[in-house]
Image (cartoon, rainbow, N blue to C red; front, side, top):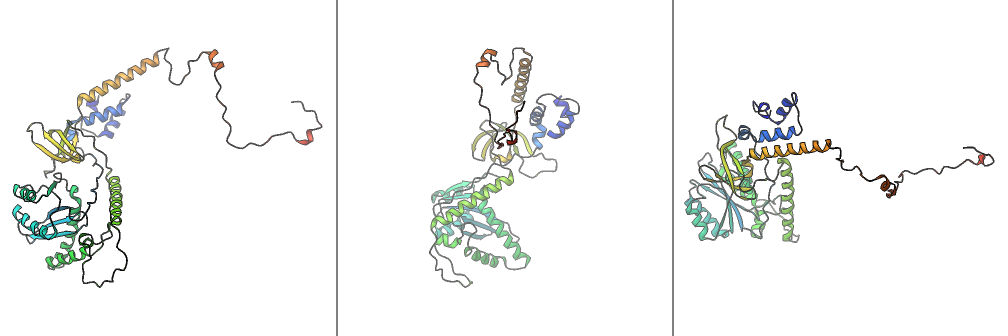
Amino acid sequence: MLELGHEGHPGKTKMQQRLRNNCWWPGMDDAIARAIDGCEGCRLVSQPDRPEPMQRRPLPEAPWLDVAIDFLGPLPSGDYLLVIIDYFSRYKEVEILRKITAQETAERLERIFVRLGYPRTITLDNGRQFVSREFEEFCNRRGIILNRTTPYWPQENGLVERQNRSLMKRLKISQALNRDWKKDLNDYLAMYYSTPHTITAKTPSELMSGRNIRTKLPSLKDLASSVPSTDYRDRDQQAKEKSRVAEDHRRRAKASDLTIGDKVLMKNVLPGNKLTPTFSPSVMTVTAKDGSRVTVQNDETRKSYDRNTSHLKKIVDPSVRDRDEDQYQQETEKEAEELEDPLYVEPGISTMDPDEAETAIEPPRLQRSRPQRNIKKPRYFDDCELDY
């Protein structure tokens, strides 16, 4: 019956409406849901699962310990922008490059690190220049730990991605007004360094170097005492928690139930034609899981991939589905037999003997919560004999 009802691959609601016009049985909705989950064609074109709740990065102990880098471009001029931003102060450096090879990237980073020091960790994506052996050796010789984001999941490096959008906005304005974008880039950075951040309420230059840089704008001497270090830490934590709750609610985030050993389908992240299914038909096995980052292995080629849980669709085992249906059928038949049994007593019905029932302790009567009048005989009836 389920196979006939699922001809044409209707969704859950359509299939329920179609079958209810002709038949009904206990647990029909659950059986329909399991049948749709077990359909291979529906799995391949279904929508991805809900994203997991966001996990905010804690504020580092000091500036320039944990940084993130990314490339922006290519621009119409053929140039690229290397953006590096500090997680503590939100201070950022921007370098203009013509080539984004591993050697050129390492040379530009060395210029920055000579002035500001070597960071403890660098968060970066899986670009070719970042995964090369030359770049890894450059960081290893300087004691820098590389934190690579999950492939095809730029949200994991959200801070630098957000800064790239701000940079791109200014570059678009410069091109629209036919201005020198390199000069406008310097003006933007000068403004950014000297403007209090919306979260920390302090300028990036102050948190980075302990002082506010002098700009073209006239300034008054700051007579107020310096804000304690815990002030911007509290602001940072509160702002991150507030945005995390709001974003999880907007995305209807839900914790993933994927575990090691589960069979999954992987989302097609590369562009295809109009009829390309959402998920690849190749079956994958979950081999490792670290938060929302999951490592899967192709059952045929044995090749491993790192993906976010939102890019994976769990495969419902048909044997488990059939076993659940058999168990449900057995429970339904058992309940029917119990109802037909004359000795069966429904829960909540007393089987106490009449003699025992008479000696049972009577529960206290519930008193009315509403106030009552004191009813008494009127005075003019005092001299009368009343027969009730």
